View: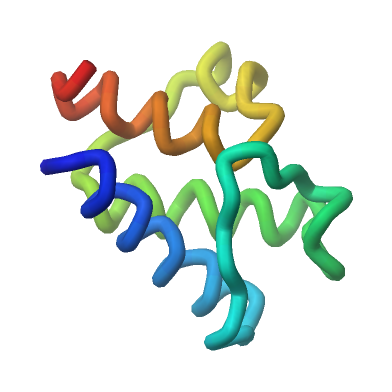
Length: 82
């Protein structure tokens, strides 16, 4: 899966979680940049990402996620794309 395909799927997940079809993700985006992004929404994002990509995150990986770009990079790494 290409980085662009990963980004597109993550965008779909975020749009679904936040019920915002116009949401545009940027690698530097953090929870502070999206209204309503709290711990509950983060769990939804992680669960949706695991399901969409057929992966599982470790606690260490989750703890290291500070921005959307970190999530995309972790997905790519787990898929063996980096």
